[in-house]
Length: 126
Image (cartoon, rainbow, N blue to C red):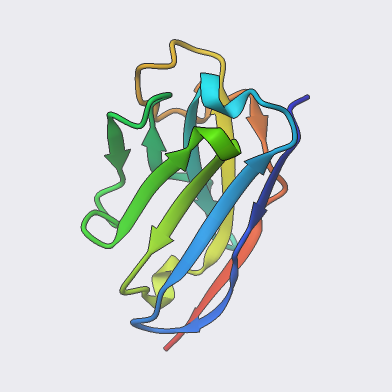
């Protein structure tokens, strides 16, 4: 198991910003494609954004394009999710995950990811 720890969640007003971080206690993040997912109450877990091993390619859900940015700092074994212009519908638990598949691709499917963090709550008030 690869311990992944998310941080940076909290309560923010609509239109505000948050920056989530996902850190690993082992130096393996730098070798893998990474993803951010979210799950709202009563809904299925859904893709937010993914990034390749080297950060050269990213992929976003349509609902967050232009508002969220995924990035990574491999020297710190950390992946970030900058969230701007937040909306109440962004309220969810946000999870990061790492994939053991080919690291130079972005992956959409939950099944493509092997290790998950415990999640961090993001609440956006209207």
